[in-house]
Image (tube, rainbow, N blue to C red; front, side, top):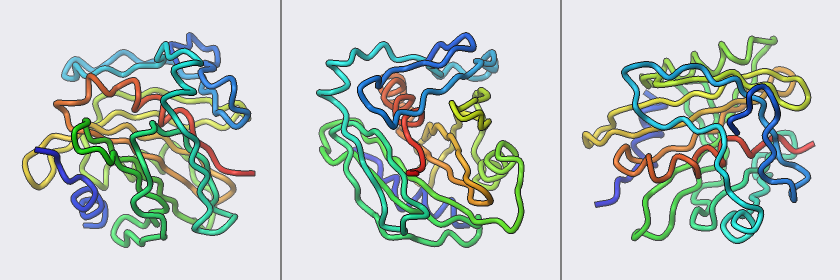
Length: 220
């Protein structure tokens, strides 16, 4: 039975191997964010994969993924994200998540119910002053009650630094959900992308989830 992550995750919120070198997996896409990430050793309690490279070929990428360009929250919040063809937008209008101080600006879900369910969403917060983007993201993750399984620092091509975080959370129906978070910022606006699936499906979807969280960014 497919889990219904969307409502449960939003409610919860409201209450590649790089060796120091950039990984380039979407060389045919000029907007690709190539992440240089030094992989920390995985905590002993976590046996969940934390890939830094997928091995996807250009042919596979062109046949399997599409580029979503989002601007429903205005040009200042426009972003792009590379998603599997099986994942489509299900909510595009901004939605306030008051208790965590975020505004959700895009939810994307696996449409075919015969396939493993993945949910992707993007949210942002406008602050009055600059904040350490790593601390900002980790604080949002703490507020949600997620358990951090692994994390790795990120350096984007423009020199911006952030963090890539793998988490686990048990949601309302008792299902364990594995999520991977990454963040970017522009000035005092901070953005987070989260890709999630059921723990039982995660090992088979780990590469897809990594590809999603490592291929997105703000529109110029």
